[in-house]
Length: 157
Image (cartoon, rainbow, N blue to C red; front, side):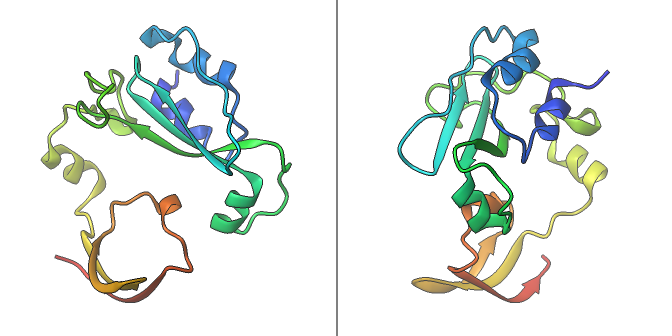
């Protein structure tokens, strides 16, 4: 049986359905998930009770980020799933309560993550609007515009 975190990860790139997400998070006491709304092409859906943040996008933003053009213009798509730790937002007081893939939890040590997933590539040299230099590779790729950054070389620390 899949863990809730695995179900959420499997929803990446799929249409956002608040009822379906609520069913996955039901074991954490989530009774309702908000619908995506807004005038913009992206939105953030919070579930404070389960310490989850979903970034959802309309078709034009997904097209800009991935090149996909086969999507319904009115549909919201799940672009990112964030399993949050305490302090990630002033509403979040507890970490994501479930297990992450590979048996990890939000309380796992960095050494456990490195043992499971390998040594991270922490920095990369790059250019962006207004400057250049190293930047953290752990950022959400969906938050980086391909037009604002150009890769120049990679440095593994």
